[in-house]
Length: 231
Image (cartoon, rainbow, N blue to C red):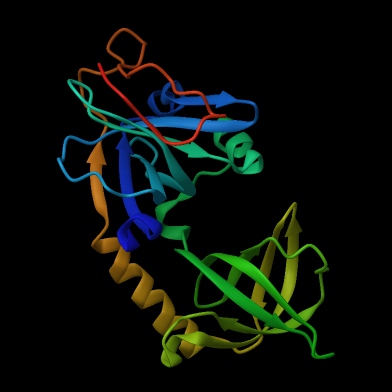
């Protein structure tokens, strides 16, 4: 059961963005994408998914949950991306950035402490040596400064020090560390990069989309709980 609750890091490669968009279905503002996975031990429930595009050497990282599992000839999972902002940016190809510019993507929580003593909790999206992105803290404004602590991280990577809000984009806040080349952030980035090197990897199969139509099982109902679908 513990394995079910943990987010699995997974990398899925497409030849070009057109292939990816053919597999991305939008229903009621949510994204659905089928990931072919022929392993027999598909037990994960939550996924931190890197969508990579070979043609442009770009990628986007999204968070999703397994909505349905398919067995038979087309074994795999239907993944639901619930964040409508992320889904819209994927459809517009605005979520993709060059690999060299990508920070280390994360799936954890951070505690932000203001000078007043007020503490806020948000979702850590990614971090680099110069800053980080946090989602879900609505009261922040550009110019605000906070002490940043990664909840549940080892001591050597948890206290990231002071950072200032430099950008607000919807529910996302971009921070710049006040300490140049923050050593704690550097250790956290190295740890996350190591985790991504161990991520599960899958590839879009060559025979799929040959006639412009993706080969995948019928879509599940996004309003229903997890279920299995056969072929």
